[in-house]
Image (tube, one colour):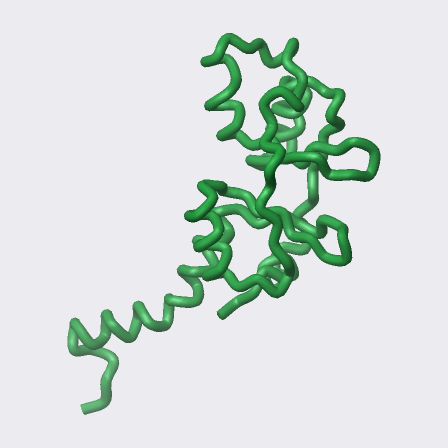
Length: 148
């Protein structure tokens, strides 16, 4: 079973995007758009104090009467983050995401965030791990791929 460390190593070009807790939601959305990412970490100095995702905005933004340019990010960010370690397995990520209804898991090593694992990346990793099993089952069902 693949670990989060493996996922992070495969995607070494991924950056961790942050927004200051004093910034507004519109600033965070612009960073997310430019970076093509679904989540940013919220910081106070060097400390991570929360995470802001597209889902947070969809549920807590304009539909609740907030204006992105006038709303502080701290008003709608998620403060209670589910943190994982590099040794966490992909299967454990799936379980945590399901249990806590989150789509992004910050990865903590030596008390420092070293990456964020998204639901999409976890799904891709699960598919890759099971690709061989899927091919074997297809061959079995179709009666192909076996010597005669």
